[in-house]
Length: 149
View 1: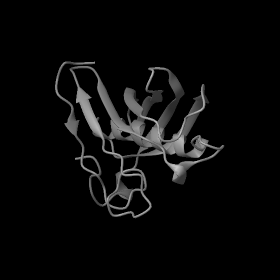
View 2: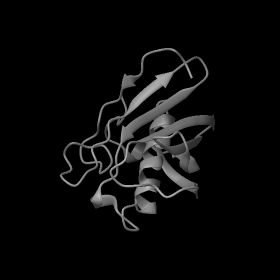
View 3: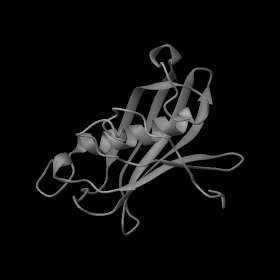
View 4: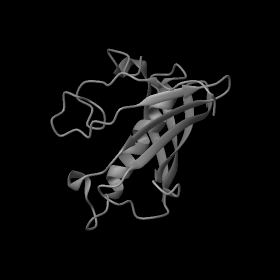
């Protein structure tokens, strides 16, 4: 990526991934890092018992929600106000609870109203636990404000 300092993105209301107004939310804080050709959105976080699936590990749906948010935010940073149309994930390793994690999402390309993104959840040792790709569709009529600045 680039040597520029990451910029913190604004949180948005009641989102259960990053909104401060949701008492059951996860509270992730998002950052964006850009260079001339790339947009990377990331957050460092931990899954807790609230996101548990198998004992002591994150539910696959929790991982999916976090990756969706990272990829979607990367597409928003390209200027499109999008919703997810399709997402494909690969679960490579179990994701432990109470362990430091990093989620990343980046824009691959956009074509008209479509944004294509990729994302991953990375364990503290650098291994990719979950990876995926998403197709996002520009739908500004669904939004009354700009989630990601």
